[in-house]
Each structure stands twice: as structure tokens, then as C-alpha cells.
Image (cartoon, rainbow, N blue to C red):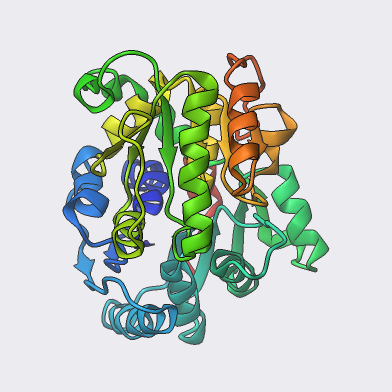
Amino acid sequence: MVLGTRPEIIKMSPVVRALAKAGAPFFVLHTGQHYTFEMDRVFFENLGLGEPAYNLHVGSGSHAEETAKMLLGIADVLVKRKVTGILVEGDTNTVLAGALAASKLGVRVGHVEAGLRSGDRTMPEELNRIVTDHLSDVLFAPTPSARENLLREAVPDSKIVVTGNTVVDAVMQNIKLAARVDVGELTGGGEYMLATLHRQENVDSTQRLRRLLRGLQMAAEATGLPVVWPAHPRAKKAVRRQGLRVDPRLVRVIPPVDYLHFLRLEKEASLVLTDSGGVQEEACILEVPCVTLRDNTERPETIEVGANELAGAEPGSIASGAKRMIKKHGGWKNPFGDGRAAERIVRAWRPAP
């Protein structure tokens, strides 16, 4: 199993547990794409997964640098350990590198969360998804619409297994643990909205990031609730580099938090504002309304059931979307499955002959 970022660790944790329960021989290789304690190691600890067998410590860099280092390191381990199959999850550079290294060595590739499409090929994640899907031998599609995306791209139906999304498994397995942590000091008490920002197209553009931060402040003004923002290292660095500011009365900037604290923050929030695909899913599952700070989403199911709305980066759209969505109080159907996706993945996954 090749992992590299916080969302991958979270979403694959149920698969790790299911593999262990089934007595399957496996190990975890961590590329170190997320490399601070807060962004990766603490999630292994929170989820009781133990230490990965390998950590490549790749760290940050350009897409080319990251992917090249990962390719070398992953291929090395696959050969040394005589690996017959790898599982990857999602749309990161880790996923692309894992699938590419394995396929060139004739190692079987299983892609968890296959078939997601935003329709925007300017996004590095979209390119990673597409290439990984077409390199994979088994494609674990989380929803019927993801399966349809794959069929439209001529992926053989025999390779596709609709499993549900492992994010449901992870939320269901961990929400009781999250209820035990205290987030009062993080929020300042009272009702609040929760925000996340990390995507390249949002934080690397000074103009777009400035509009987004203005949008968060306008959302706070429009709803009368402050925004709590656990600042991703990439976003925090961009804000500092670009000399941007937020009004602390409207936007409370806090350090990154571990998974259980974040899950509790999501559960207790009146509204989530995010550019994260995984957070869109989690908010939908937790019945917390969401406004997505992007022009498109590869999670259209959240919009179809009424749990989510696209606002882009325009401050007025963000504020009006927040004012509209905050009136919702759940009640929609969870489109991502019943929390047994990991079991289906393990049943469908077979070692190469």
C-alpha cells in the first residue's frame, strides 16, 4: 500500500484494518509527500496504524521533483520486496508515481477512489486521476457515477468494482473517538464555520487567494458567525509570502490539527467552506452543509443531494452561498455508501498469480 498525504492515510485506514483482519500479507510505504508531524505522522498515531514499513521522506518540491523521487524510491522497494500488487488511493503525485512505478515493473495496480472527474485538466489532480485509472488493473469506483466516468473513457467494465467510498468507513469508525476530544480552545466557544484551503490553484495565485480570504470574511459578516481556519502549511506560507491579512474577529486562524480534532470541528460546525474533495465528502456524511471554494468538483453527488454548493473564488458568491447553505440542517441521503467499502475492496482484490 503506497500512501503519501493526510487524506490517503485517513481513507486507506479502513483498508489497512480490513487487510489485517483478513490475514493478508501487506505493508505500507509512505512517500512523505506530507512530511510534518501535524500533516502525516500524527494521523498514523491517531488511527492506530503503527509506523509505515518504509518512508521515502520526499517532502515538497515541484511536481516533477516530487514524482521523480517517488518513482525511484517506490520502484526500489517493489523490486527489493518482490511485491506482486499495490493499492493506491485518490489523485496525488504519490498515487501517480505508485501506479507508474508498479505498472512498468509488471506489478498489479489497484486504484481506490477511481473514476472521479472534475472535467478540469488544468488541475494536477485531474491528470493524476486519469493516468492512474488507465494504468490500473482493478478500479475501485466509489459510486455508480464514477463507474460511468470510467466506462465513457473505454475502461473495461470487467476491471471496475463499485465499492462505496472508504471515507464513510473512516468517519463511522472514528466519530466516537472524535467525540472525546475538546475543540473549545480552538473555536473560542460558540457557533462557528470551518474553512480549509490548500489547492494549488487557490493558494499559489495572489489574486485568487486574496479574493478567497475576502470571501471568508464576507461569509462571517453575512452569517454572523466567525470562521475557524486550520491553516494548511502551503496556505500559511502563501499568505505570509504574499503579505495578506485577515481580520481575526472574523477569521480565527489556528495551526493544523490532527484527524480526530478536525473530525470534531467538522461535526460541530454550522457550515464548512473548503476546496478539499475529502472534506466535501466528510461534511456530506456528517450532515453539515458545505460551500466549495472551487469552480468545479469531482464530487457532484454532494451537490445533487443538496449538501454542497459551488461558489468559486468570488467573495460575493462565497458570502451568499454561506448565507443560503447555513440554513440547511442535513436530511439529505449520503451518496457514498454504507461504511463497508473496505470489506468490498479486500474481497475483490486478489494477489497476482
